[in-house]
Amino acid sequence: MSITVRVPAKVNVQLAVGAARPDGFHDLANVFLAVSLYDEVTVTPADELRITCSGPDAGQVPLDASNLAARAAMALAARYGITPDVHVHIAKDIPVAGGMAGGSADGAGALLACDALWGTGASRDELLAICAELGSDVPFSLIGGAALGTGRGERLTPLEVGGTFHWVFAVADGGLSTPAVYGEFDRLAAGADVPEPAASPALLDALRTGDAAALAGALANDLQAAALSLRPSLADTLAAGTAAGALAGLVSGSGPTTAFLVKDEDAARTVAEALLASGTCRTARVATSPAPGARVL
Ligand SMILES: C[C@](O)(CO)[C@H](O)COP(=O)(O)OP(=O)(O)OC[C@H]1O[C@@H](n2ccc(N)nc2=O)[C@H](O)[C@@H]1O
Ligand SMILES: Nc1ncnc2c1ncn2[C@@H]1O[C@H](COP(=O)(O)OP(=O)(O)OP(=O)(O)O)[C@@H](O)[C@H]1O
Image (cartoon, rainbow, N blue to C red; front, top):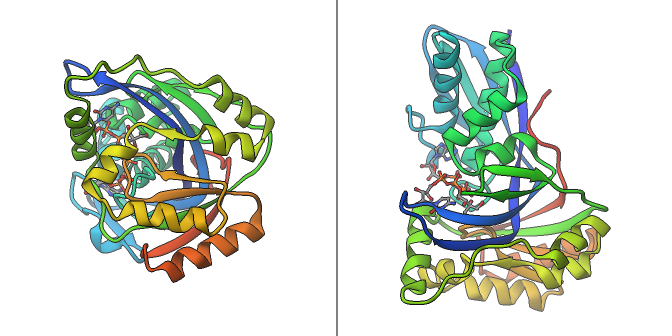
């Protein structure tokens, strides 16, 4: 018997970053929006824990115990006194190390799939607590939709979304390390007063009313300058997307994927083609939001 869970990628429509905390993390006001690019995680009973991965970027995914899907299976098993003897297969469609929470998606997916396979009966809150131990982005991958993340991003308040937003994602060659981008944020902020992170009322309003033009005006990512500092060529990608008619563009999370909000499906096709033709990205993906969270298929 196998269980398959489908899990979405995310874009951060607002990422407000506070000063570094004593534990090395940063307090955030992190407005997550799930988008319709998905990984599928399938678990099957096996002799021992084993991870496999398929998809164009599979070669970049670690298949050892550092894989977030492996860590999720081990964490749930430890909690319920089970041996995590499962084969976890990841069908990967979310860009790797792209700032779209691909690894987090697989962690949340494996957790939900193992929970169903083993019939642990864990509550939603228990699953969310395990997610938060696995990584700051993992709880959101479980719930999907839209949410405000506070603390290091793991404390979630679901948000209402009043319409469908259309996106184009420009996937860069090679990834960016999340700790390196936060480190660069600290370096750039050194000596300056970093304000307490807070969600923008205008942005929350734009989400609630489904107003793409208003959302475009409110998009903000405090990690963008750090990502651009580490990868200056992203400025060319951002310029190419906006020149092609996107309402707005920004770096997705810690990057290097860039996200372009567009008016509708037609605009998405036009902007995706222009981004590809510009030669400033490896590939361009079209998606919509909000997307549902991790779901057993
Ligand atoms: C950039 C985002 O993707 C935006 O949603 C997240 O903040 C990153 O979340 P994540 O990849 O799940 O990150 P984690 O695995 O929890 O942490 C990885 C590293 O990122 C940095 N980190 C992460 C979250 C946070 N609030 N402050 C941080 O400084 C820390 O250096 C940490 O060691
Ligand atoms: N299941 C997984 N899929 C992809 N990468 C994984 C996975 N598990 C662990 N990793 C490791 O995590 C690193 C970051 O990959 P991931 O795709 O999660 O990045 P990301 O999308 O930038 O994450 P985030 O947006 O949460 O910061 C990879 O370089 C890889 O070494």
